[in-house]
Length: 250
Image (cartoon, rainbow, N blue to C red; front, top):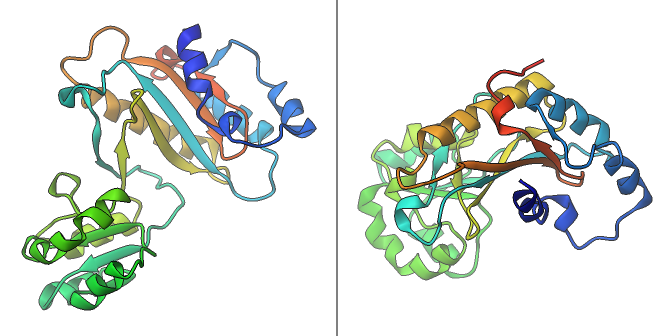
C-alpha cells in the first residue's frame, strides 16, 4: 500500500508546480497521515480541506492493477455519472442534411460540415468533443493528425461516430465523458464539484467504482484497486480504502 500511495501522490494538487502555502499545509495537517478513509468520511473531510473560494472540480485517481503495455488490459470508453460532473461540454457536430438539424435541436454548440472542417484546418479547436455520422468520416480523414494529437478524433468505440447523432449530442451535453488510463495504469476521473452534496459525490464515486469492477480486464492479476486518491483542484489528497466502499456509507 505504501508504494501505491507514493505512486499516487504525484497526481492531484500536490504534484502541481506551485509554492506550498501556509494555508495548504494547515489543511493538509487535517488529514491523518497513512490513513485510508471510507468514501463518505473522505467527502466530508474534502469540504474541510478545500480552501479556495471558487467551485473546484472533485477528482478521483484510481491506481489499478493493470499493465497498460498490453492492449487487452487498457481501459478506455465513455460513461455518464448519475449526478453529472457539473461541467458542460462544448459539443461540435459535423453533419449534413437531416442530421445537421437533429444535432442543432439536441443542443450542439457548433454544427456544420465543410465550413467547420476548414475552420479546424486553420487551427480552431474551441470545443471539447466532436461528434459525427459514419458518412462524414471520409471528410474528416484529412484532420486525422490534428484531431488525433488533441484526442478529439471521433471514434466509434467511444460513441462519437454514430447514426443517432441527436441522442449522442444530448448524452454528451448532459455529462457523458471519456475515461482512459494513463501509462502508469492510473485512471483520473472527475466526479463533480465541491458544491455537490456529500451524498451526490458518494453516489457518483460508487457508480464509477462499480463500473470499473465490471470492466476489469480478464488478464488483470492480483489487487485491482491498488489505491484510490481523492482531491479537489487545489486540495491535498485524501486516500480512500477500497474495501470500505461497499459497506461503510455513514
